Structures are given as C-alpha cells and as structure tokens.
Image 1 (cartoon, rainbow, N blue to C red):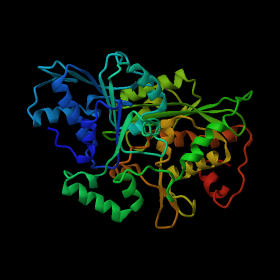
Image 2: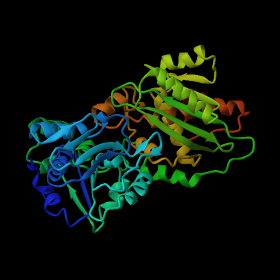
Image 3: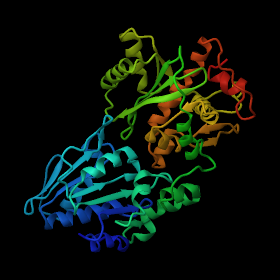
Image 4: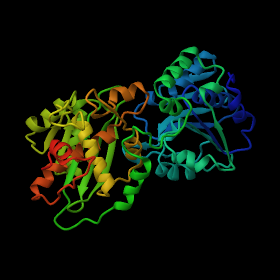
Length: 441
C-alpha cells in the first residue's frame, strides 16, 4: 500500500513535523498516486475528516475520486465506496471530494473541522481561493497536501508555500520514480526529441515563462493590470466572446470586455462551466448577456457552436450575436497570419503591447501564456491548434479563445465610432494585413 517513490517517503516519516506538504514536478512522478496511498493509509488508523479538492470540479469524475476508489479495490481496503465519498468501516474516516470554487462562488462550507486537505492540480489554484480557503482550516494539527505540475513561475500555491518553514517541499519527476512504466518513458523520450522546451516543462516540471514560440509573456500580461483606465463619458460598450465546449474535458467559456475610452478596453467578466448540453449553454449565454448588459456577442460557430448561434439569432429573434469562424486565409489576403484565430490573437497582442487593454483575471492570464505559434508552409504565423494542445496535455484555452473572439468585434465598434482609433504602422502589424482582415478600416 505504501510502496511509493523514495523521494516522497518523508511525507509519511515527517508528517508530524509540518503542516503543509508540496509535491511538484513533471508527469510520471507518481505525486497523486503517492499522496492518495498515504491518505488512505492514515484514514485506516484514525477517525478523520478528509477533503480532496481542486480549484473547480463540475463532476465527481474531475476529482481524484476514481484514483482513490481504484486503490481501495486494488488493495482490498475496508472502505465503503459511495457515489461521491469514501467511508472507512472501522475508523469511521470520511473522505469527500469537492471544487473550492463553483460558478465563481467559493465552496468552503464545513471546512473548519477538516483534518486533512489534499488539493490536486494545485497549479490551477488562484491566490483568491488560497486566501479564502487556508484560514478556514483551523485545526492545529491539520495537514494540507498540494500536488502539482508547475505551470508558470508564479503559480500561487508554489509561491506561497514552497519556501515556508512549515512546508515540506519535494520536487519529483518520472526519473525519480522506479515504478514509472516503460510506456511513459517512451512518451517522455518522444517529447524530448520533438521539443526540448516541451520536455522540460511537461516531464521535468520546469515552469513556463515565455518560450520563443509563445505569443505572450507572463510579465507583459501581468503589467496590463497597471493599465486600468477610468470609464469615460459616452463609452462603456460591452462585447462578449462565447466559446462552446466540444470535447470531454473542455469547458464553455465567456469573456466580456468593456470599452473604457476611445482606445482603452478592460476585461470585466470571465466565466466557464463544464455542462456541454447546447440547451443549457444557450440559456446560460442569454442569462449572461442580459445580466451583464452586453451589447454584442460572438460565438465560435465552427462545430457545435453553430446550433447555439442559430437558436439565438433565429429562434429567439436576437440579432446581437454573430458567429466567429476560423478559415484558412488565402496568401494574397494575408501574408503574415494563416487564419482568423491567429489574426485576432495578434490584434489582442497589439492591445497588450500598447497598454490598451487591462487583464487581471489569473485564470485567463494562465491560459493566454500557453498560446504558441508555429509557421505554415508559406512561412506565416499560425497558432498551435486546440487539438494539438490537447495531445500535448495542455489545458484547452477556452477563456483565452473567448477573449480573442470578443477582441475581433472591436473593429466594427471602431468603425461605428467614426474612426476614433487609427492604428499605427509597424513592421510587425501591417494595416493592410492584420487590421484589414480583422475588419478594422
């Protein structure tokens, strides 16, 4: 049961010496397996209340429930496996599973009496969640475990706990795990041969900053928080991008931007959910559109977003929504960028570079820094597709895509405001290519 990598044995041996335990590193290091085994072992010995959670959890399948239940079955442990919890028949220990933020609200009721908290995928924890969650865990002898594959240099969980004296911090990779399968080792080697940067991030746990092929750097995105602009009279137009989930682990996302002045915009609302039913998503879009007084919305109509757009525009008689498509652009139309998603990503890039948009949502920033580009056969920039990101085990950038779509509407707004914004000429952003294709005259 406690057959875990040697590097993580101190988590058990020194459990009484620390309050916080942080295991981070690359894929295949057995971080989750080891902490899961440790928690089940302790749960057999003492009557405890244990919570296994993460930033968001829409269904039990998004938690470590399956991992824990499989370990119980594998080792024939005396737990009752219920639909959403595990209860030890002898000690009475109860293990529950939850997301700490649900639909934007904190979900921390009943945490005061918890003995052990395990937060998997801790790289996704926001500072706001940590600031609210940690003070609610009040027992003197409570233990808090973090397992994570670091995402960026300033992951809040790493930044807040790794160097604390009351935190036992272990970095572990597949190379430290004697139980790592040959299949995983082969995957790591394939990744290493394809891209050393990807290998170091995915398999060696090195955080991202800005690689050569990243569109945005973390530093420039964080700096946009200093560019907040007071709302000027006669402005306030609100534009929303709606990204509709397609695949199993995808989420629907909405990002709303508001025009603060002739040149300046601000992200004022970010939201995502895991429910993929198109009727639910249509209703959610309508509710957000109304509640936040959105003037115009744009929906990704490639794929399953098409029916949602049709329902909104035809069935409901609403003409404030338009569709976003991502066709490959003819070389004669654009010699710099290969499709509309890339065009509007670099439109956003220019807003960021000029200090014309403020982005403060941490989750959105984390997605934006994962956007990378390559070149097509005509040497034009093109974003790495969501499909490829999924294969590379990178979280789908749903919120980032929603923002990119919202930004694509700015050209129409500017035209209607009598050309109040005239983009400057640069060697990187050419008016006839980038702004012309994006609809900005």
